[in-house]
Amino acid sequence: MTAKLKFVSAMLIFGSIGIFVKNINIPSAEIVQWRTIIGSIFLLLVFVIKKKPIDYTGVKRNWIPLIIAGIVLGGGWAFLFEAFQHTSVGVATMLYYCAPIIVFSLAPVIFKEKVTTQQVIGIAAAVIGMLIVNLVGTRVGEFSSGALYALIAALLYAALMIVNKYIHEVSGLESTFVQLIVAALIMTIYCFATTGKLLYLPAGKDILLISILGILHTGIAFSMYITAMKHLSGQNISLFSYIDPASALIFAFIFLEESLKWYQILGAILIFGGTLFSQMKKYNIKDLGGQDDG
Image (cartoon, rainbow, N blue to C red; front, side, top):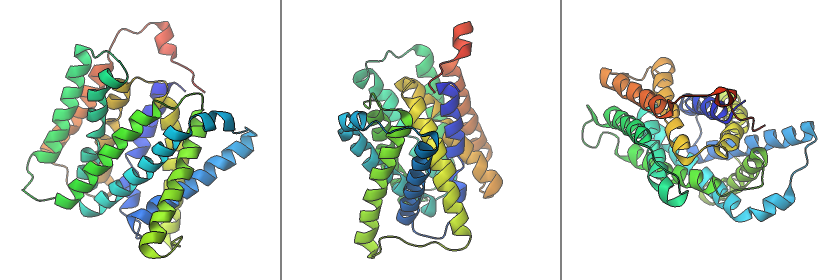
């Protein structure tokens, strides 16, 4: 599977997260704690089944960015899930995706990447689409706390994207595994400090929903996301990331019956259209074959 296909697939899976989180009846921090724990266990089983040894030398060499990435990962998810509880999934996810704008803006400075006119037009269309979805028809103060949580999550998500570009000589699977372990430890410490409990035990349907969140949305999708990110430019990461909020808007409309007004549809079209336009070019046979990154 090519890096771009992996990344797009991960974005579509991420787009459905809000549907599950909205239906889990435990606090956001505990949801993230369970998500990181289950995701870590799932990836550990993958290592065991594949009989693939962990490259401890590579992990040790990258321990600083891996720890930082794990911390911002757990914090970002916690703020995003809290945002879901205070505003609609569509609005929270769209605001969360201010992060790619930050990365796109910083890419020429941090990653020394060139920005083309086509990419600027594409990202501009995506940004306009996001603004339309969030601002048109919105009353002052309508989603104050939810918006704040989502924007904090966006800052942490941007930091995650940037930090992961500095992790080298470690496979996507190993990088994901270490980051999830760090995030699980951080969230466990936080939950214990705030609730006095090391682990909150879910019940009923929450067990199934949290399991799906941990295995599909974390173990599988996040591994694809981290692996693909290593082979994509900062601009590509930023632009493809808009598939997540656009799909989240559609999923929320279908499964959560959140209102989808004409201007939100227009915004989603601009987000998808801008993303696709930025990637349009003349492909040769080698490009069509893609990059096999394992």
